Image (spheres, helix red, strand yellow):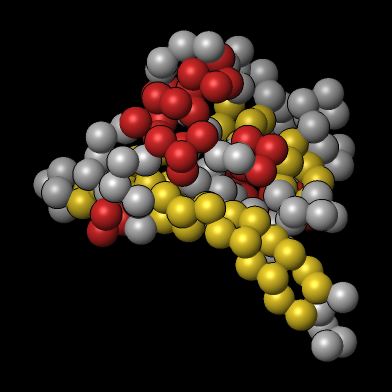
Length: 146
């Protein structure tokens, strides 16, 4: 049996910091162009010369899932995508504290945790990135027995 996992690989050396990925993500989520409501951020370092996209990597053993006190975070058995059930989320913020990337954010109303859900398998940020700084990757590894 194969474990297939999907995630978005970031190539910081190709990122120009244009923020198109953030704009299309926020538009998909909220219907408006506001990078604050994007589910990825761009970290600017080295005097604004290096731009590093920061997005959920859908970890194999996600800490956010392990620490959620209400089991609002799940890992999809088919894709490996780590998602947050907004109906179950109480907005305690523990998952945000334990995400080593800082890729979990407050919802637009500030009451729930939200994160990248891979756009259901067709991430708009990857499609619209003009430089290839974001890649949608399917990783198919053998299970522990094989």
